[in-house]
Length: 171
Image (cartoon, rainbow, N blue to C red; front, top):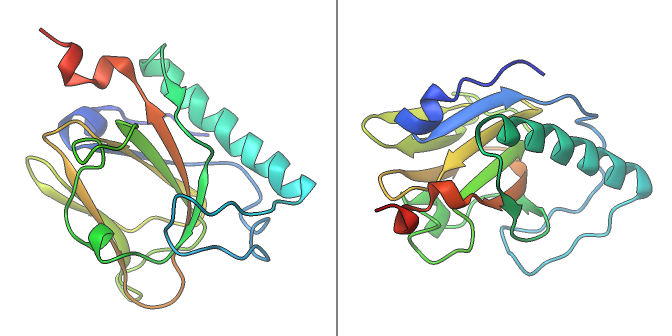
């Protein structure tokens, strides 16, 4: 895995990179619409790939933040809800995580109009490749929205709480 440029995480509200795993391992999995309460049944191989993804992500996190916690099991999502298509910040809306990472299992392109957009000082539209992750900074100055134009948009969601990102703890 290549180095992740954390400059964009602090300045623009996101960082991105490419993970090394079998991006086709989840193709036969029935992904629910975005819903926190739905658990999917994974094969042993899918569990191994999920652990491989999590290990790589946490190595990236540790390089900048020594203390962090996965707040819930990774979520498997398909599509975009109306609420997620509008600019929002999950942490300021009351979620337990202040940083989350989306791992993309489909390619986003200008043609299929599948992207994630982050709003900070500027607006950045990201068209992730299959196997890319987009790490969202949920500090209050950043918002994001997802778009599912045409075709399938499947992501694996990893929600983290990072104490040093919590502005409430800063004086």
